Image (cartoon, rainbow, N blue to C red):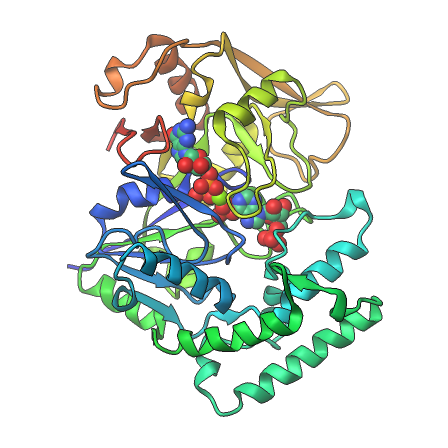
Length: 434
Ligand code: GDP
Ligand code: IMO
Ligand code: MG
């Protein structure tokens, strides 16, 4: 029987707990596939007390019988990919035969990483995007400009010529910005050292099963295989519908799964949208419910809110239901997943933004520009539950004040609550409604 592909994605500004939940849901699927983004992602899994962070490899990799696919919408830095593989080898995870890579995925060159730094350094402090400096923007720019190099090109005899041409192009741009590549380091290595590693990593990449991902995935769905697509970043970082220009360079929303894996819209089944019970953002850009007070500090400390890729402290604030309603709408979320309410277990009260006010006028729709200084969040207040949240006694046995808060979210967003996560561990997850 033919099956549909389910998709799981972040509804906020990333780091909602996608890695943990994909790992938790993996036993239900045959295949896990990443469809966009690159190593700007940092997906954390906690298995039997040990923490693992994945950047490019899908979060199903720790389940021995699952196939994992890096789809054509992803941009791949081979050096980071190899480092991640080496980390898995050190843990005796047997991954090579279970990991497919789309030939149509684009490569991130060392000079893409250089350009990411060039562009960031050229901006004034308030205009910097605060990128992860992984070369994401420049690689997607070249893809759209029809200049990029794809994974499938590594098998072509013109590969070196293509590489040198593109690198030259990038060095010319750097020169226009008076940027000296000789003073530039990538992950504490000189450009030349990184480039040497990059070519070694290309040889390593060739050992993998490089596939036409669209054929593989459609065949699998025709043959009844269950596939989960794993989003990276979050909806508010979507290049079209996020808080532009403070966004990433891919379509992080559910529509991205069609272009990112080569499937038709009617093949998409459930859309799992993940939100924290509060909100975070890393990097620059508007964040209406951001807290600059002690509560923000407590969220950061209790929630361990430091970037899984860059280590930067994450900005923290209350959950924003206006923003979430917008994300639910543009993704067609069928199932909501709430993570990290345990971070607020000690709170006397919990707030949620339910509308915005601008110059005295109330806005209930997410506006074009949320950067406006006059835009103020309007909050509803809920009683804190003030106790530990058990994950193993069912939803009905959770504290009344917590259930009340969750049912407010459900009613406001008008979407079913599927899962609640009450801790980083695989097991700390409870099903609310299937
Ligand atoms: P992702 O990018 O969406 O995969 O999220 P990250 O891994 O960047 O950040 C989520 C962080 O929260 C990680 O450190 C997870 O281990 C942790 N985490 C996930 N779910 C929960 C939860 O329900 N409670 C707590 N306290 N931590 C969680
Ligand atoms: P996961 O998958 C949070 C942010 C960066 C920056 C902006 C653009 O772990 O949720 P980029 O390097 O993509 O050009 O940076 O996007 N960003 C993320 N923030 N989680 C992520 O991924 C992110 N990936 C990119 O901080 O503001
Ligand atoms: Mg993350």
